[in-house]
Image (cartoon, rainbow over all chains, first blue to last red; front, side):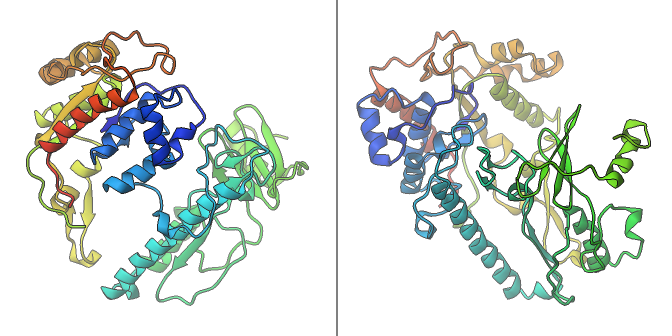
Length: 283
Length: 159
């Protein structure tokens, strides 16, 4: 079943969606909190038919539906309940979260996901090793965003809310079998992955600046650099502990740790950006 | 999990026969007719490398994984508005006249079943095709009936 209907108005998840028993009872007593999308999802999952979101609706993410899917053997996109060491958990609903919410349960939910993904990556690596391919395979593990649980105390949850370290810093592990491992503390960017692969994996001898703004992660790293980050709506650069957000008409400044102190304007990157605006400098 | 070659039909049941659903139905039909290519479809046009890079073996994903072919796909829908797929597609004005003409028969064939609908949650639709039921349990039974019938006559290849 592929859901392609109009999006329903937003509602808090009803009590009836919190467990399968509650859902069955809610359907029997005609609970007004149960929406049509939930009835479609229930009907599909009860028949062992996968339910796919083509237009957004939160029904299948709710606990009762995850439980039903597991019961009837329909694939779910959550971690298995018996591999969830962090308890109690609660699914994050960014639109309904408030500043006073306890971040503990939603953080546990996130940690369980990470824990499960770690195990899956382990299985993948073991398979590569068993196939005797690990000696000539480069493995890169990273994420496209961090995840915030109101760490800035600004009612910010999830990602794309700001560019503080809680949302912009991600793990980056690069395994190149023929190179000695090292840990770096310098600021790095995803832009550094292509030059690293080109030079260390593919033997490209060109100067990196011919094709990239990044650097080879196994070479000398710059000790101070601006990195660019972006979301659906805007972009920013991070320099030292400062975040400079570029909106269409103005720039916003805050600290990487989320504190509100404004940081001073850096002259170097602004000078560089001047060419986009047809002026050498713009202060 | 073992994957067997899918046989029979693959039913795609869509709650909501609107612009999104009719564009999907028309797109699949145009590909089946050879009038378009499924650009952007991983299953239809994506490729995967097998073995080492130096072995130069790249195959379409649809040859590597036993997926249902587009010829096996059939569509069904529920909608609170009784128009057929072609009327919806014409009103939605997503498709060109030429594509609409080519996919017209396939779109006309999709006539929406009465939907489970709540005008408070989706306020901008005037419904004329709603399931007659006295409560949630009866509504669910009506939906399950369709899902069960389609599921029984569908290709099932994940065991």
